[in-house]
Length: 105
Image (cartoon, rainbow, N blue to C red):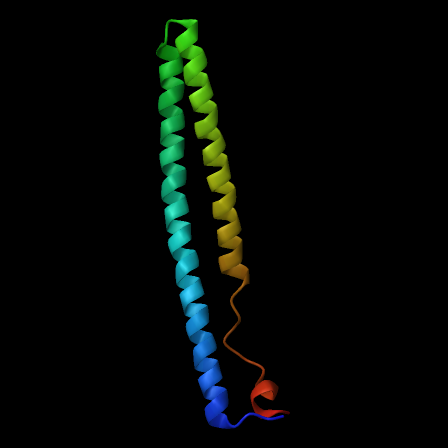
């Protein structure tokens, strides 16, 4: 069943708008994830410095626990960032579309 040109263009415009919205959401999430990653890395470095400066073993143990969590969060954010970059690079169709769908060829 072939679509008429007007219907095909309408469908294409709707689909393009969905892609743009999805792409914008991925880019926003990438920016937020990068920002969170940098904050987690900074916190982990600060906690490492505090561990080195701490005198009591109890303080060092508490700081080490917090440091481990901060490093874990940084690793999770780094993985999430890589996944988002991959999604952004691999999920978008190229500019050419299959005309046979539109024209029923």
